[in-house]
Amino acid sequence: MAAPAGHAAAASAPAAASALERVLRHTVQIPAAILVAAEIVVLLVGVIARYVFRNALTWTDELASLLFLWLAMLGAVIALQRGEHMRLTAVMGRLSPRGQARCEALAAGSVALFLLIVVPSAWDYASDEWFIQTPALGLHNTFRAAALPVGAVLMAVTALARLLRLGWRDALWGLGALAAAGVALHFAAPLLKGIGNWNLVLFFVLLLGAGVLLSVPIGFAFGLATLAYLATLTRTPLTVVVSRMDEGMSSLILLAVPLFVFLGLLIEMTGMARAMVAFLAALLGHVRGGLSYVLLGAMYLVSGISGAKAADMAAVAPVLFPEMKRRGANEGELVSLLSASGAMSETIPPSLVLITIGSVTGVSIAALFTGGLVPAAVLALALAAIARYRSHDEDLSGVARPPAREMLRAFVVALPALLLPVLIRTAVVEGVATATEVSTIGIAYGVIAGLVIYRQFDWRRLYPMFVETASLSGAILLIIGTATGMAWALTQSGFSRQLAQAMTAMPGGAAGFMAVSILAFMILGSVLEGIPAIVLFGPLLFPSARAVGINEVHYAMVVVLAMGIGLFAPPFGVGYYAACAIGRVSPDAAMRRIWPYLAAVLAGLVLVAAVPWFSTGFL
Image (tube, rainbow, N blue to C red; front, side, top):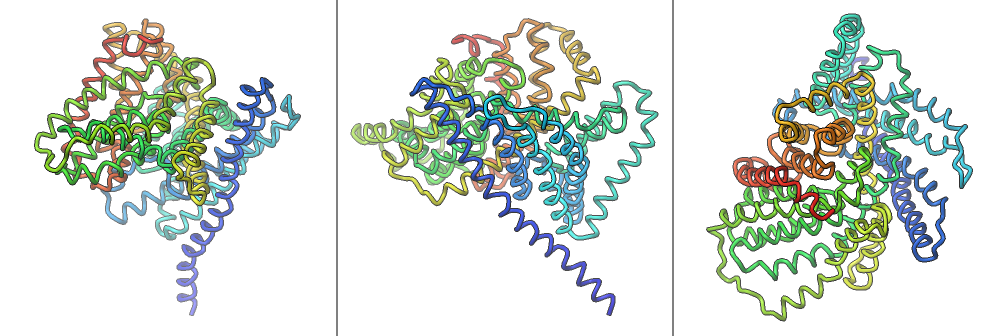
């Protein structure tokens, strides 16, 4: 009787874990959605007070900052619950089902281990913040900092529940592997201390690389590698890591991230994106390769609104792909062009990567927004040439040039949508509003356009959009937080100074430095994606670029485009698989067809790197 009872108890563990995950999901999603809505309202009130009534409300920024950390942490919880934290799955996908289960157990165990280590330090850090009060509202900073331990606890429970859901054998295997690694590091500490900064290779190349390749979410892999380094080789209190995470996640500039993510979802829901694509199709759809030009133009326009590549592709592909397939286009060809256009549009403002660069390096966001338009146009022209060459067998039978009246009507319908990216760019570039402020203006404009002009506003979709915004923002901001902690550890070790000296001493001067940067960021983009790579290496390399005489805006455009190539290049580029998922095409279908498009992007990148005017001519 005992064996069946034990078997039943073991079998009930995954069911109980699933039930716990469902409860946590509802517990977290509602307050996170409320926080997104509150951030929009608070910031919009501040903008209206400043620009309409000429009365700046200092408390709005304080309240927005307080709510923002809670939004980031609860969003990170939702992203973990939904499996939306950025991670590399290419290696795990090639394993057997048993190997995949063990990889999942190792990933969940790594997440839980990092969070359980962080929780006590996060509580201590939040408690110490009680002695700091905000100047306008007089609130103790603990009310804001408490988001760190609360979010860490919720994520730890989520990770442990997922570990239980995988089954006790795989869970024990994952925990055993982590325990063995911890014991090995403990006994190897004396040896590692004796080899100087070469020990960084173990922690931040081998250990971190193994975690990323084994599908540990990138943000947690950063955090665990940093904790392992500090705990093994230093006496640094772990509250320092928590404080660095707080600093990385709490920059007011980053408030633009959730707002632009929501704006991207809003333009899709209100039909604004569809109106822009319809106008471009009426203008160019009748010529050979015309719909490919429409896709490139639509990505150029939509990227100027949402700032998030997944949102860009999701707004464009479903509108164009059915007609392109009807004209005989190969589905692999379509996804190849979509992926390459994603890499092309990385520098189009208000790119989240550009906002991150401004946050961590101090480069003017207005200058980055101004400098990003022409480089993307150069790459778009290169892609258009390849698209025209490869569309020689396009079936244009039954496709006629629409009458001028129809084209004019499509333009009139699309005009309110076309004005939005112009409004966003002009407001930031001319210094009328910050990137955060203009995002709230864009949201207000989108709501009015959806309700009054396009008459397409589904109130029932708002809650899922708020949750989606919180999830994507939390995933991005957690990476920025843990990468900031990792960058601090690298800086304290002296690595940043050594790296700067090595990069500056590269043969060829500025040209050699730029060439090495392109290669390095292409690799980083394929493994780490753009934002974590920028947070880690931006503060280290931008001063070096300045030292060899490279303009910071020019350097920013080059490294962002290089990371875009890595992000959308198979077999490791996460963006490539996102494009396949959005286009509903097997990754194998585009694997061989994408290389001419990526070669065109690379050729455009080399041209942008060689001609600084493309990036700085309008500054």
